[in-house]
Length: 464
Ligand SMILES: [Zn+2]
Image 1: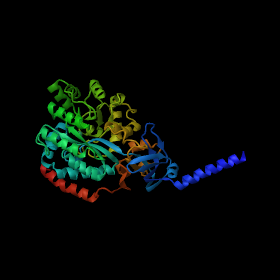
Image 2: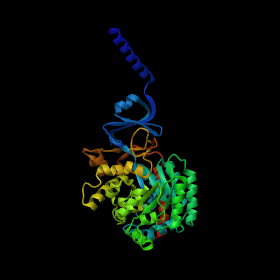
Image 3: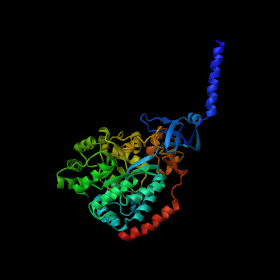
Image 4: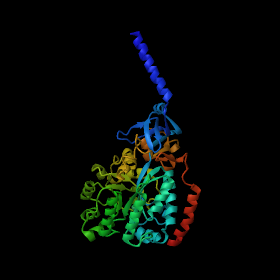
């Protein structure tokens, strides 16, 4: 019997020696935090925790000692005072519109669009404006913890290049609109441009090219259907504004005797991979259509409040399991791209509107900005949670400020006290875009100087 134990002990020793000789697996990066909020299906939270990253992919999430035993990383980020969480996903914006930030406030959507935004765009949108604006937006997003965003604008190829250079992930839609705009005289020209754009960026690592028919009231049915067909042809997302204001509902009822969602259903517009921004003025039948067609919705509480557009029925979308993400909308109607604020306002607006303090709790708001956004973009297998096999899109948030003290529940802090400025580290696709608040992919001073220089021409265009 004794010799058997000796033999077994020798065997175990040999195994340990073999493992030690082989050593821990070499990987590119380990991020360690006071908390790791995984946002996986079980909503696992580690305290403390580490995320092991190799190249563009998360390979393990576990206690720091367990990760240290298994892996040796070329680089480590010890954010031991921070919360580590998935990067936030902004499902609706118009990145270059940061150039119109604060240009015209306190107006209803239709006045704001027709008197200020459309005229300013007619005079100032150019490839250069889009490039400078996107770089400014990207800087703001990286600094405030957004790692992926959906965009609808013009010269989208310039937005794609600037987004890729900044290292962000983008679902970027070339706008299709009935009237002449800076990058297309006709919707047919816009569609041709969109197709070229899709072909150019179809296989990009960070960019998902898409088609963005502006709305049902700014396009005729033929243009809407051609946009949907283009999306289907290439299997790319289709982004549209839907039922944003009561005016849109009124126009739709007058012209088509139907709600916007029902009108789009009646012409056969809805299909797979569609994302509708706002979805404020919808009834139960509209929600049933969106659910049946698998259409995702982007909820933009701050823009809806600022433009007094109304309140989206978030509780109903959640109850019907309509894929739902959060967005900031363009900075001109927000006026920033801070997704922490979007989470907080989504929660507050729902409580205020329903007189129910349990509506959109912190956990739900965080879900909407992470895994909800990923699902809305059709990317839930890639991003939105920290688990092995997912792309390494993550951020760390400092909770050292007076404002963050004391800390009983990290999820409560992320939604109710954190601001974009609290983000310390931003990582996309395994690449560190910001470390200790220093952005590595953009020259901060140059980006801001370029934007200020371009603002002079915007000011001139609207006589301000
Ligand atoms: Zn919008």
